Length: 266
Image 1 (tube, one colour):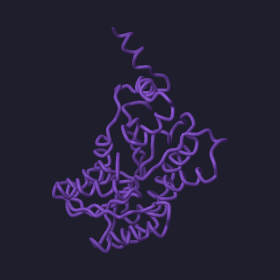
Image 2 (cartoon, rainbow, N blue to C red; image 1 turned 120 degrees about the vertical axis):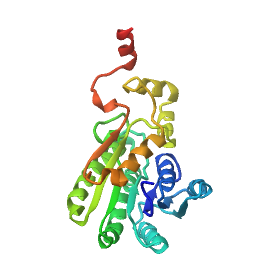
Image 3 (cartoon, rainbow, N blue to C red; image 1 turned 90 degrees about the horizontal axis):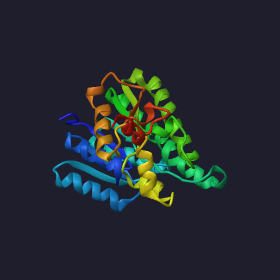
Image 4 (tube, rainbow, N blue to C red; image 1 turned 180 degrees about the vertical axis):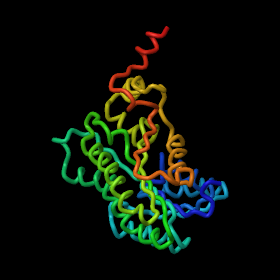
């Protein structure tokens, strides 16, 4: 098992990528502290792990509030004595033009997507340093590299995650702490479903977006979880400071239409 005897924190573990990653990490031998603001969904993830024979604990956490993040970290150490892996995965999206965005909405998106990483790292690196190292993984996005319609706050936060990741990798490499981020493409999560539904014609918009994906299919949370496992395991022991893109190829071309491409080859 790739994570045998490791202790991992996964934020946003109640659904989507966080849930898939928490379950996979546990299957690979990790003891997993799952954090989420939604207690019902977080406990459902814990149940999945425990029924499969894994070890987990759910801690209800608003990752944008320092006192709660500090409690999350300290709870992990009280339970299992260390923190080997910190996966800052919690995220939110806002579909609005900037001029229609309130200050509170902007602060919420940046708080969950960016500030939460600052807080979790702040309270975790001391433990990692004392134990001789660790791994930090942050969830960014393909929106870290290019804009998309009506998501200025989200794209801003995710672009910042990439640069924060690189800066942390530089700061903490001397402590044997690796820091990377994962950048998912179009992934079938509740968050993207809400994003699509805001368009008024979710299936049409999804079909149109997938036409720009060379592999032509939507990613599943488990696809991202497998890449996350690589980045937090010793398989990537010499990898730090990278933005690891998992997107079916969508960021590999400025102009691409899968439908037209298929027609030209028939």
